[in-house]
Amino acid sequence: MIPVIVIVLGIVMLGAAFAAIYFKSLLASIISAGVISLLASVLYLILGSPDVAMTEATIGSGLTTVVFLFALYRVRKGNPDD
Amino acid sequence: MIKYLAVIVSVVGLGMIFLPIVTGFHEAEQLSPLAAQYVEGSINDLETQNVVTSVIVTYRGLDTLGEVTVLFLATVGVGLLLKGTQEDRLLMPFSELLETTSSVLVAMIMVLGIYIFSHGHLTPGGGFQGGVVIASGFLLLLLASSGTKINHLVLNLVESVSGAAYVGIGAAGLVLAVGFLSPEILPLGDFGRLLSAGAIPVIYSLIGLKVGSELTSILVTMGGE
Image (tube, rainbow over all chains, first blue to last red; front, top):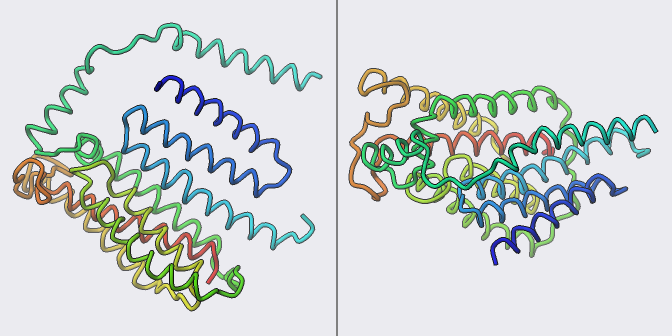
């Protein structure tokens, strides 16, 4: 069962990674990058390292996403054309 | 065309470099000698239930100090670059529902953050994770309630006092115990209790406060006030 979950998680993470590159909208890219981190934290938990999973979930998918969103907002405000 | 060729060649080259790691992989039957030393030392010498924490705070304590320094420098950089660019807040009018719910939730998030960093030596988690949870509580306040004023003086005070205390406890280990950042300056206590493992919970709580205040100040600076 566990190998199946790990493989499915890996495939979804790869899909989200390609989506982050190919999405036209930067907002969608940031969110799919956050999804990668969230799935990675589930993967760490399954592999038996709850400490790393907590770090990945809080910093990777929580804080980094918010910081990127703030940065995107500031950049947009600087160049209203984009 | 040449661009695609270069990409394919570099990807294949990278794959060739990683190939021996994949083909030569075999599952470890037992811990490596160093890891076995850490696990035994953490349980027998330091009375720490969570081995990861004893490695982070004690055996690799200097690395953690470096990590905290990097985070501090990043905070200073963000503050310096975005200084004076504070404009109006980036948000729409606040709804009363959101404000009421967030004020209930924030208290719970703060308690969770404090729990995570103060129990770092017993259960998974620690200063970094707890600090980020606390910062996310402040983020919720910033985003959901009007009139949230974060006092920069208090943030800076908490940040610098906890940072100085961290280094001070580390230096006290030089005099009172076996070396820099040694946790044996406080009594080790009983295995598995909240007040055990010497200075490890104190150090991790200080790291939690420092990380929490630094990240909160990054969020306040970037999000505008």
